[in-house]
Image (spheres, rainbow, N blue to C red):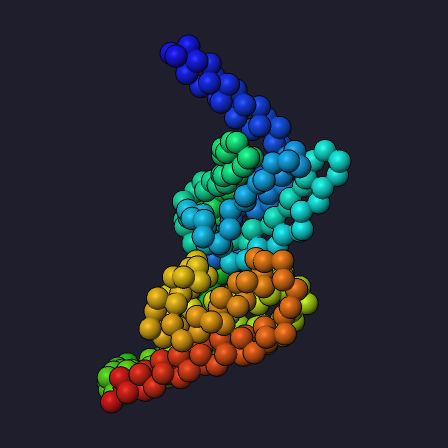
Amino acid sequence: MVNFLRYFLFFFLTTSSILAQDITYEAYFRSDSVKAGMPLEYVLNVQYPKEIDVLLPDTTFNFGDFLLTGRKFAPTYSDSIFSYDSVVYELTSFSIEKIQTLSLPIKYYTESDSGELNTNTDTLYFVEYIPVVSDTLQVKENTAFQPLEKLINYPILTLVVIFVIVVIIILIIVLARPLKIALKKWRLKRKYNRIRNSFEKQEVNNRHDASKKLALWKRLLEVPTDIPVPALTTDEIIKFSDTSQIETELRSIDRYIYSNKNDNSDLMVAYDKLLSLSDNILEQKLQRLSHARK
């Protein structure tokens, strides 16, 4: 009996190893550097025997220092021996670590076995926006004599400067808070409208378009809520009281994106309701800012 168990364990481990060796992949960033907040793309191409089922990371996967903002994937293609999958992950990083890395898991399944292998780690180098400037400056010598300017009445100038400073201080005390709130509202609406225009222009002709439009809406909802919505799944989004009312629409969109159904007749109605909700949340945020002024 002990020998049988040893043989079974050896056969199981050997089979899993062989299956993993049959899977080949390419995994890499399309750039070798990253700036905070700038978009970047990570490519994952997988080739595997057609009798194996492969599962690649989706929106529920934790990408570590990176935020998933979208995905572009091609339908699975198969020949007589292999199947091929290709996904481009659209990511954003706000980390300021000098070296940032990423490795993704590839899960595989058969009728009698399952396993997981990780891609090779790819590396990005963080690039700062402000370059380091040398603190040594070249001083240009100038020994030419210059004519003296007319004398200035410094007592009067001092009084004028003091008066101006006092007026500026009074204006800052009186107007600082209203101006700060008005500027915040203007920036909020400008950012929101920029993403909203992209959302309205995004057409939905296939599942990829539907996924991209949903990602734009998540970015749109992030503006008035200050919640990292692009990193959340549908189940996480509907837990919030403001978004629980659109559970039906979100699940309808998810079914279209991740199922084999081609009926998208109700998608635009669902997207319109998502847009209406985000507009209402923005209006509530603006009203709260206005009341904070009083």
